[in-house]
Amino acid sequence: MKYLLMIYGNQEKWASIPAEEFPAEIAKQDAWNVKYKETGELLGAYGLSDAAAAKLVRRVDGLPAVTDGPYLETKEYIASFYLLDCESQQRAEEIAADMPWTDKDPVELWPILHEAPGNDL
Image 1 (cartoon, rainbow, N blue to C red):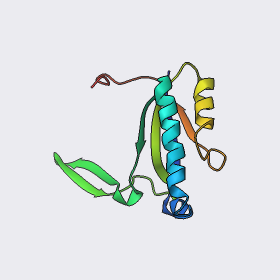
Image 2 (tube, rainbow, N blue to C red):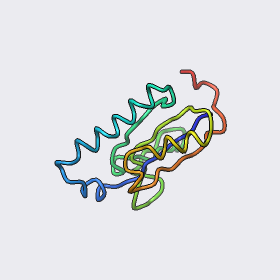
Image 3 (cartoon, rainbow, N blue to C red):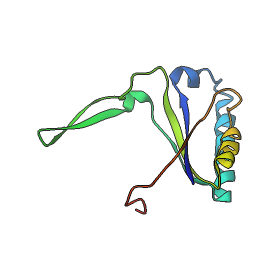
């Protein structure tokens, strides 16, 4: 079954990490990515830009209408997301708990109930 993991953050949180520690923190996440990619359980890992770069896209009179985002105004936003394919919810929880920083901040875990047609693109 597939699961979505999400990490939240904001510029204040990232700025609180001392600059000299940041490469080590990134290396921990990269190691986690490689570990679960090698087991076949991590299908993809994606980091998002700052929320200030998010856009809202609508169609107005048949044409795209783009405004600043994000859709939800919140103090924290999705910083990165991960797609897992593992045998059980328990295994997904174990993998999520193994993610760096889960001793400081929670990781959000969502079961994916179905896939849309065309996912094999």
